[in-house]
Structure formats: structure tokens, C-alpha cells
Image (cartoon, rainbow, N blue to C red; front, side):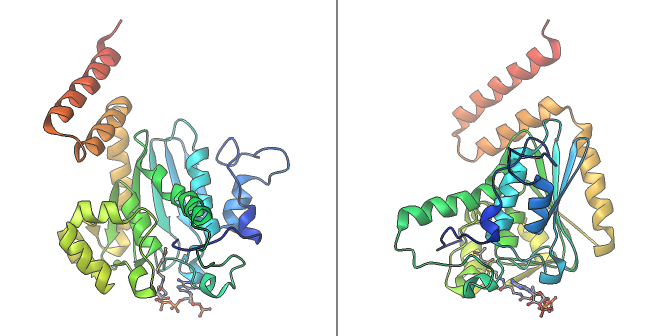
Length: 284
Ligand code: CAA
């Protein structure tokens, strides 16, 4: 979010996570599950797979500050054995982005004038934590996107490693049209995926990208008919879990480093990771 203050409304009560996915948290804290439900989120962990559902379908999964804090809490509380995290939206859309009631302050916690730049900087950084953990090398994150993915919803999909989209998907970076910038970690992956020219065109026109173009631009790695989305995600998850866990972690780390590294640095990183794999596979 661009310009916000920490409020005292119910959303501010969404504190750090407990010890497990449904952990009871520290003394005096309500269970994580309960706090997530209040934030419009649901977390289900089934062995190595965690599913995070944006769960305010009656508001098209519009996101509040509590949603972003809840996402950060999920990142902090994932059990060790989780290898794949799937993000999906309940109802007709993945997410309609920021809850517009926050602009009027109706959501309990609203906007300020940004006069305290340091406090606002800290506040936005806290919300961005809801997105940054999705890049962690120990998990692979999959966005299952259908219907609208607008603003903060589009950025959430971009924060994931892989996007599987239904053919009814509608991506839109709406922030500039509302006088804001995209500030939930989306600008970097967008530029990396589509290039600076296309990213400028998409953001500064706030136009909608449909499924066919999303596939062509690489915004969605996989596009399937709407009624095939769940099966496609299940198939992808099964394939991801079939790979050696240590190799998956090392390879994700390596691939994310590639864009920043010189060829020489990347060659060294490959050697380092392979030594780790060889030790793991053949060491005595
Ligand atoms: N905030 C709050 N409520 C929202 C909402 C939002 N972003 N999006 C939808 N809703 C509510 C609607 O007000 C409506 O409520 P009622 O039933 O009480 O009238 C309900 O959800 C269903 O919405 P629609 O009837 O409009 O559903 P639709 O399927 O016809 O259209 C939509 C869906 C295209 C997403 C449309 O609702 C829409 O354009 N929403 C606004 C999207 C928007 O501008 N989001 C801001 C993005 S910018 C951002 O995210 C900034 C950031 O910094 C992260």
C-alpha cells in the first residue's frame, strides 16, 4: 500500500503467527486459524502441500491490511515439511485487489497523508512481507488464478513462482489509475517477465490482460479451461512433489540468483549447489 497508517481497528489485532498452521500462538493470542478467518483467509495443510485460499468471495476476495498481515503470518507459520504452497481464490475471482472501502476508512483502518515517511515506510514493508516469503527457496509457490486478478491480486499472483490460469482470467494492474503505484512487490517480477516496455504499457494504461495474452507474455505459465483449473494445479503439484526435495530447493535458489549474477558468478553458484547435492546423495 502506498500511504497508510497503523490503525487500532480489528485488523490491527492480526498479529504474528503461532507455532503451527492452526497453532494457538503465544499466551493471550487467538488461534491463527481464527485470525486468518477474520482476515478473509483459509489455510489448509495436507502433508507437503499447503493451500491458501483468499476467502471473501462476496467481496471478490478484496484485500485489507489484515489480509496482507495474515499472508505474512502464514509464511512465518508454515510447518517444515511443506514443499508446495498453492494460492487460490474462492468464488468468481482470484482477487479484486485492495478493498476499496479502505479509501473511505470504512474498513476500520484507512489512509493517512504520508507525512511520517519513516512510519509509512515501515508499515508498507510489513505488508510486503505478506508477499516476499513466497519466493523462499524451501517451497514452490503456485498461484491458481481465475476471474479477476486486479492490483494487489495481480501482484500476489506475480509473487508466486508459477501461475496456472483459467481461460476466464483477467489480470489488471489498476494502481496507477487510482493514483497509486503497485507497491506489493509486483513491479520487479512484472518487468522481469514482460520487459520494461510492456510493463509500462500495462501499468500506465491499467488495461486488462486476458488469458491468451497472459500465456503469450509469460504472465501465466499454464492456461487451462476454467473447469480444468483444479485438475491442472493438482497435476502440477504432483509433478513438483515427485522431484527430489533437496534438488528442488537448490535449483530454485539457483534459478532466482541467475538474473542478478554474471555468468562467472552463476557458474560458481552451480558448482556450489552441485557439491551440496553430491554430498547429500553420495556422502558417507
Ligand atoms: N473492494 C471492496 N469491495 C469490492 C471490491 C473491492 N476491490 N471488488 C468488488 N467488491 C464488492 C462489490 O462492491 C460488490 O459488493 P455488493 O454485492 O455489496 O454490491 C461485490 O464485491 C461483488 O462485486 P461486483 O458486483 O462488482 O462483481 P463483478 O463480478 O460484476 O465484478 C470486479 C468484479 C470486476 C472485480 C468489480 O467488482 C471491480 O471492478 N472491483 C473493483 C476493483 C478495483 O478497482 N480494485 C482496486 C485494485 S488497485 C489495488 O489493489 C491497489 C493496491 O495498492 C494493492
